[in-house]
Length: 438
Length: 141
Image (cartoon, rainbow over all chains, first blue to last red; front, side, top):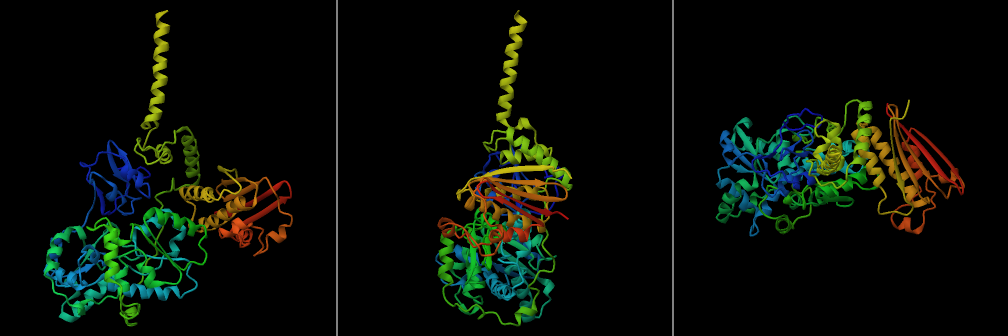
């Protein structure tokens, strides 16, 4: 059984999974998980469902490739009469000799999609919507970007008091899917229901966000195919895909969303902060919580180093991809050039559900009981060696103490405690042997 | 109601490198207890301000967290130097922060007023040459 935080695991969809036959039970993922959602039990890693935020850190650090992201195969598109590819802007950064974004769009069409609609164009609309929101002085500052679903879920788990800072604008892929369907249906006189929109994803958190959207009930996106899944096929198509810049409809600022800082450039260039890497984001979110960043208007956090170009499902390393994106998005600086104001009312750009805290870190639903447990944890922590070695299967001595108190680990899972105990027992046996000789 | 949880954190004078660590641990503790977001927001701000005050202005002291079913309480006790004029110290914009603190962006004179604004109950006692005790409570209901 997967050890749930309070004994009983809650089943929910996660893109990030474990292939347990590949797992050696090492401590790499254990130590890197930002929500302490992994335990090694019985020589295998387990993911605690209710804590996992699908950031993909474990996929990146697993040397045995036992952590994987569940995405749709390319063949999934055949379930729809009309198929539209929604390339994430970071996809453009995967081909270092790319001359024009239109090559990627045409390449996708050659692969069997009826159309390709740029998520970067969705980002253009989202940027405008966020700029409108920032005009409202009543929103708590800094306003926090909703773009990285791993960061939004991190806030749900670890910073519930910052949830009302998150801007209520939907993600670019959602907006792109809505526009793509509407425009395609109108242009071809077909029913929107017959159109399937597939996000070409660098990121497991986005895959999860399609299945379990945050802030709205259903997703306009019908599936997610990882960049890695199509990389080989698409590269060969790009080689003979025609260049036609008239089909590039997103602004450079929209394309810039692929890298950390791109959203800030498009939204609030004056007074924003962009932070990449989940540990860095945690540090800055702590500061926001303490009200240390007074005067900051907008915070853009990306779980991956470099932003979406650093997503674990990409092919190219994030530094190469980042410079490719820079090269491809260095022309027009006018943010509203590509978005007319009519767009702002035509589509459901805003969330219609509030984002609730995820109380997976809570020790108990009852405050008194939680305090009692906390007290026990403190006592246990003072008895543990404090090496944070992970050999017990919990990431730190403190989380190990929490696991003992929650009844999912026992003190003898600590090899150092075990050795101590063995020493005592050995001494007792020596003593016993000596007494019986007399 | 009896106090059910107590944690104390020593805070060193001038220790800017570790400033904020006690606050981070206190926030983590309260989140694990399931304290509401609304209360967390107030405690976070006040806690960091009071910890920073110990680092910047005191000769060292202790930050103590107390939790009972009705409220969260933070007590900051230091061993000096003490505040000669509390009313003045409570005035927005008044600060005695030194050059080192100011270069680090502190000393806007908002510390004590900010604490008072965020706490449900706020009390400050000080004697020059002896020390200052600040007690803040945050109602859970």
